Image 1 (tube, rainbow, N blue to C red):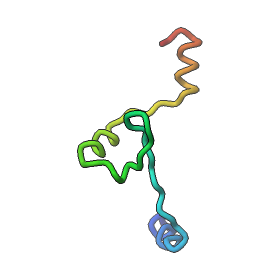
Image 2 (tube, rainbow, N blue to C red):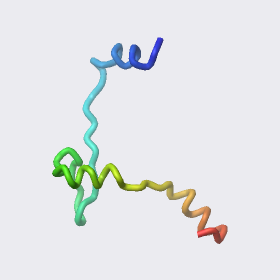
Image 3 (cartoon, one colour):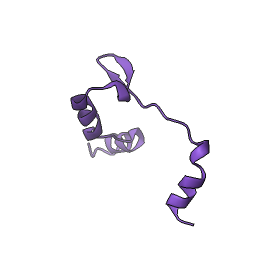
Length: 61
């Protein structure tokens, strides 16, 4: 069974997920952003805090 077949079978059970982002000190849903802000949101670089802390502790920062 392929991934697309599995997704089609579970389509009725799926719910919409709202993604929120912090903008100018408060949280807003990303779906309400204008086209420029949506593009900026897609270009953001995400990091894992644990890996960053390890680099700082080990002096590799």
